[in-house]
Length: 252
Length: 318
Image (cartoon, helix red, strand yellow):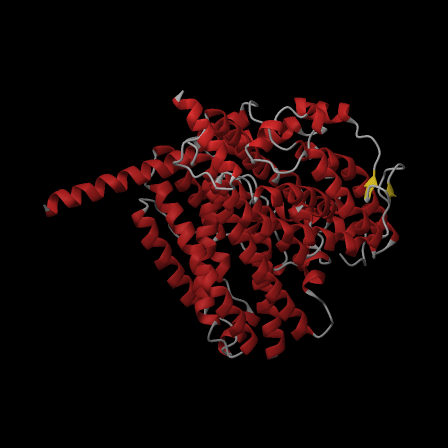
């Protein structure tokens, strides 16, 4: 195991998470509950896909096999994607979408707060750019958690149920393996324990105001990083890659 | 008598190129014409998000995906400016949206055509946005101030969209045989509907004369259509694509391209609600509206709670 591998592993994980979540949000473009919110959610989708491009390009550079951002996005199969399962979860309704976003944002921000000080300059640079965007994402999703939690009985119930349904998917954002532990020790990556602590502190503060409850789930779903995904993932990729795979080798 | 004088003063202001502002006196019919036109325009932007949105998840590169997302988002933004411009005339956004959903308000028929391949995203940017720009550049000088100002901003973004669409067409037409065929097929399907976007021939257009007198419109449908054809033919030639019109040829005497007859039966079929996607587009908007109802209610309920909380705090301080 070496530093290059650790950078590759981290860049790919960040790139896959942001790509799949950005893709999920992009499905909602034109279908939002209010025009202003449609615009806001599309903004977040744009930021995430934009960040993914930077992470995947970095992965390609350190890998040294001439793979581009699009090679990673369009020419890998499901088992090669390393994203957490949380980001694959479908857009059931606004409450679910926001809860998924809120959980991801709280962790994403805590991760980036460490990555801005990464010993790898390229990682630190991407994190520095992304962190401003993610601060806004968290503000947006927090405000909506509060509005839903402290809005009507219906919105409260929808937000609460969504949090409970998503709870088993939270832990995987801070699971470690040999390479991520190495990356953290080398100052390349992040300390997952600290991220977990900070993300939960952030979430609890917002949820208290929202009059909602979230507890760490005793059981949780592993596997995303190892290429084991939910049943949804195959459909995401089938759709996302359809044009490129039908006419491989073309420039678009 | 007073009304007659007001009308004369109003027309004099229009004739001397003064902009009419929201608080100025205006004939009721001018107001209603503008509300109808601006809200149709707003609805077109919002419904227009759907055919292109159909390809966001399948965009064939991440760069294209981001560009398309940004474009569709811009359309939502245009919808917002335009609803706001309509509100300056006393219309309510929620009423206007309701008219769209119950089918009493129209929107541009072009969005009732289906997007069947990735090349359609290029063709829409190039042709549909190109046609829209012809109309919108004119509207930047429309007599109603808030509408004219909204259009200035919209035009800047639209011309960027058009270049983006054309760039997709360049990539496809310089690409593999398959890609080129895809581009040609998209041009074949979008060409005639794009010409129809300018509306009926001048002789048939019921609103044109009054709108021209009020300088809401400054060019007729046929003038704009001709300008579009003249601008677009060389662009198709550059792409090496063939415009699907056997009658298309340069007329030296007129200094314009002649083009073949438009299938007005098809135009009216789509306007009357029987295009390929009329039902689906409205159904998609209704679904967003219905599924968003509890969300809007939650936001209002929360805002109301906050307001009461603030008031109570004020009372305590006092």
